[in-house]
Length: 107
Length: 119
Image (cartoon, rainbow over all chains, first blue to last red; front, side, top):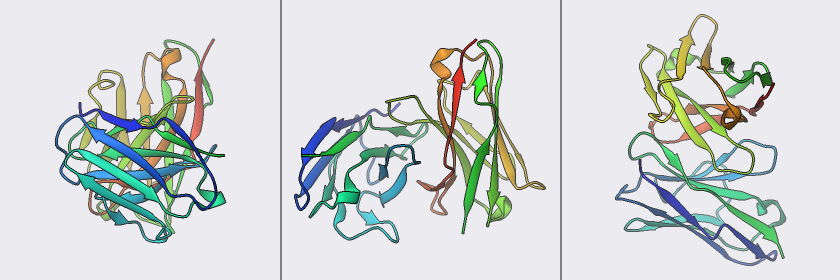
């Protein structure tokens, strides 16, 4: 199975900050990397697919990038509704696997 | 608008079989997408259980393959999950979801249902 290692596990930030979350794959997954946002008690919501493509309806302050097997989700100008947990997920090969999540908390 | 809704018992006794159904509305399950199940133990990351095509083709997570069965009922526009011989480690929120047309991510999810394994 491909292991997805997310960091940091949690972070504290203020409204207006820029936040960066990283996900590292245990092997090459080319661009088959997706990012989801999960608000407590809700299902995950797709933000970015194929490493850097923004899902329809997602604010442009969210962006994704790739460098080799390292993937980054950036949230520019953090808004109150962005305080949530974020997961990466690889779909290069089955079984699809998720990262353990990054919880973004209010400072 | 595509909507998915899980249903099934919220409490299952150890060694019994967990059974869940996902009802799909606003979209025909036979339209050509794959349909998946994901679970998330309390406080942990999601785990992919597998996905099924409307024709019956299936991919299971090898870690669960011996205990998992998925099926699809196109006449009812729903698909189902069964997990046998459950233990406490199977306690989780179970989600059903649609795999996007591209085939590489989940674009619509159900709200999730908590299944607790306990006597």
